[in-house]
Image 1: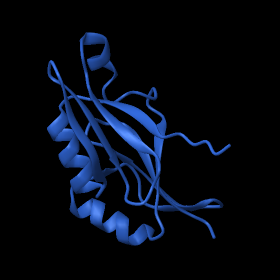
Image 2: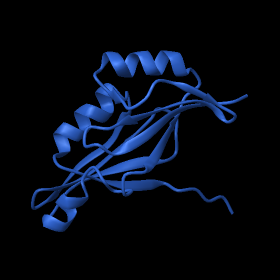
Image 3: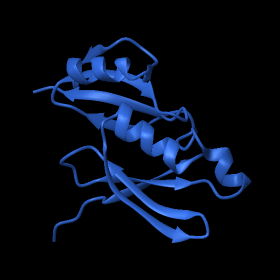
Length: 129
């Protein structure tokens, strides 16, 4: 049996703003943008060639709005792997992505923490060979 995590929900403030960030600054692909009625949409984005997508879910109510940007309690909660750290780091900086540290070499690869549009923490990571 083949199993994998297909989709992870990320609560956002605004669908279009989130789509613009993920497809622009991070160069993800827009996989779905379907109107579900009542102001809700099914919006999925993912890095090209991957199986796992982010479901961009616009916050509905105060409790969900309170979680925007802090879905993992301030920890790095998302890990964007790359085959060329220098290329992607430079492109993300040029696109205005905020890195919280300079790139560092770890036993597991080259890594730097960045924040998405809402302040969620991510690792940009080129795994060691």
